[in-house]
Image 1 (cartoon, one colour):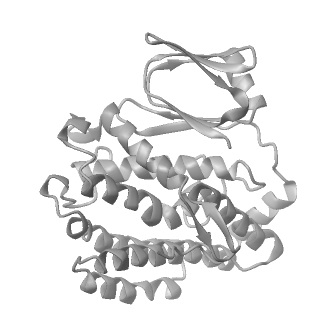
Image 2 (cartoon, rainbow, N blue to C red; image 1 turned 135 degrees about the vertical axis):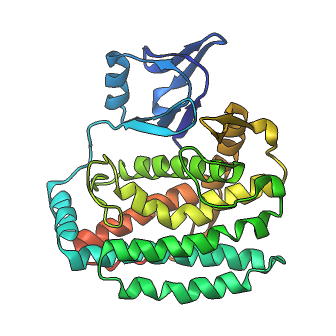
Image 3 (cartoon, rainbow, N blue to C red; image 1 turned 60 degrees about the vertical axis):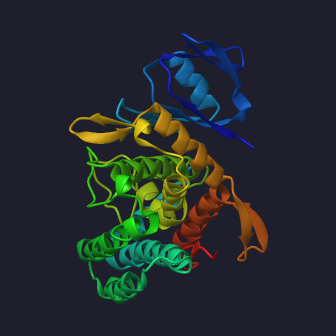
Length: 330
């Protein structure tokens, strides 16, 4: 199975025969090219055209994050599976408001259903979440009456506001109090965890889209505009509660993270390298977790599940097989 590489140190990435070599002050590390799926770069890393050509030939995506851990962009090799027919069908579903809304509602519906699964899980473990669950169920009805993307996203935003208020009841740790959603910069530790986790998930989904015939630039819930990629944002909505949020709750409730894993930067709070490494370790463990997927009557990992979800979207677009989003069952 191909793996992802995460680079935190400063140094140089280069090709060495048929391997990737990372050279830093700590020495050299070699990685067999056939074992790599994505490279995540957090340090100050130099690379040249020869290396990018090598990565492109081997269909490796390279994701870049700045000093503060914010995602800045992806080296996305020339698509090797793209189909003109599929791209035309994607565009057709985007330009037809009824078809676009149908898909957009499904992404929101999947996100909300998985939010409810998470809340019910913790309710059954003693957290007082009945009022929030009822409120979200009530607000959920608004997504089916929404006739445009702006209204749909407004309903989804209101539901996430209710959901985020549950975080303090789930973690019960003042040090990680949620308070309110804040971005760039996150104003507290919990917001920095959410932002970092979401960025990782966006890039993971992007890497899985690359292995299909879909074009990641054409999204439905998130408008296709000057942003390079949007479809990955759509699909990620479904998995945020089951993957990112569960990782956060595990890290906080098991006391894996402490104040030493955060730094004050840009008038906000960000994860330092120690915190990022702890988060990524838990995140990857979650992605590789295998469970029984009843739809296929087979055991799959969460990472494989993301690819299967993208195939379902593709079938909806090209074969009129109505898309039903994944909903976790614990």
